[in-house]
Length: 51
View 1 (cartoon, rainbow, N blue to C red):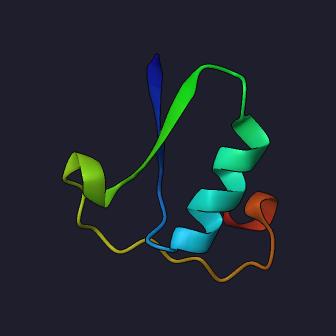
View 2 (view 1 turned 120 degrees about the vertical axis):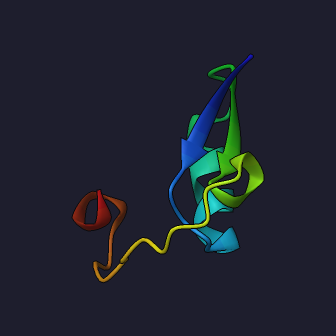
Protein backbone atom coordinates (compact mmCIF):
# COMPACT_ATOMS: atom_id res chain seq x y z
CA UNK A 1 0.00 0.00 0.00
CA UNK A 2 1.34 3.43 -0.93
CA UNK A 3 1.24 6.38 1.42
CA UNK A 4 -0.56 9.53 0.36
CA UNK A 5 0.76 12.47 2.40
CA UNK A 6 -1.83 15.19 2.90
CA UNK A 7 -0.43 18.65 3.70
CA UNK A 8 -2.87 19.56 6.45
CA UNK A 9 -3.00 19.50 10.21
CA UNK A 10 -6.80 19.38 10.12
CA UNK A 11 -7.88 15.88 11.25
CA UNK A 12 -11.36 16.45 9.78
CA UNK A 13 -9.93 17.05 6.32
CA UNK A 14 -7.77 13.95 6.63
CA UNK A 15 -10.86 11.90 7.48
CA UNK A 16 -12.76 13.32 4.49
CA UNK A 17 -9.89 12.51 2.13
CA UNK A 18 -9.59 8.99 3.59
CA UNK A 19 -13.28 8.48 2.79
CA UNK A 20 -12.85 9.80 -0.77
CA UNK A 21 -9.88 7.48 -1.41
CA UNK A 22 -11.41 4.46 0.33
CA UNK A 23 -10.80 1.31 -1.69
CA UNK A 24 -7.99 2.80 -3.82
CA UNK A 25 -5.12 1.15 -1.92
CA UNK A 26 -3.68 4.34 -0.39
CA UNK A 27 -2.77 4.95 3.23
CA UNK A 28 -3.61 8.59 3.99
CA UNK A 29 -1.13 10.16 6.41
CA UNK A 30 -0.72 13.66 7.74
CA UNK A 31 2.39 15.70 7.11
CA UNK A 32 3.16 15.53 10.84
CA UNK A 33 3.13 11.72 10.69
CA UNK A 34 6.03 11.83 8.23
CA UNK A 35 7.96 14.53 10.09
CA UNK A 36 6.96 17.66 8.15
CA UNK A 37 6.35 20.51 10.59
CA UNK A 38 6.07 23.49 8.23
CA UNK A 39 2.85 25.51 8.44
CA UNK A 40 0.73 25.31 5.28
CA UNK A 41 -1.73 28.13 4.63
CA UNK A 42 -5.23 26.77 4.09
CA UNK A 43 -7.38 29.82 3.42
CA UNK A 44 -9.68 28.27 0.82
CA UNK A 45 -13.03 26.68 1.58
CA UNK A 46 -12.51 23.58 -0.62
CA UNK A 47 -9.76 21.03 -1.26
CA UNK A 48 -9.33 22.47 -4.75
CA UNK A 49 -8.86 26.03 -3.49
CA UNK A 50 -6.20 24.86 -1.03
CA UNK A 51 -4.34 22.69 -3.55
